[in-house]
Length: 118
Image (cartoon, rainbow, N blue to C red; front, side, top):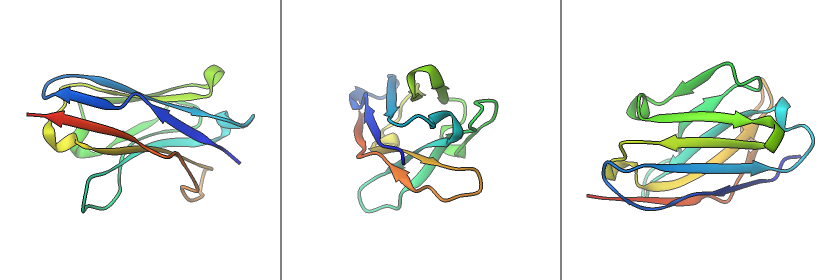
């Protein structure tokens, strides 16, 4: 079981940056693949970025490649999403999630709002 709590969201102007954090409870954090999803009003929840349990492999949605960076610090049970060059279309609630290799995204945080003004 993993309990996830996100922070770091807020209001930022287009072109600005934010760093989201997600702290996980549990002793097996390092065993989980971690991901960041986002959901804008009226749209589906989409995977933005993911990182392997070892931290040696990452993947990104095309819309954020080159602007967002996912990382993890297993000593702090934390996964980060550094977001640069933000655009108004990045506005959404951002959720972190965890899954075991080969499993489903079963564990979710409550989300943090990111709003980018033009």
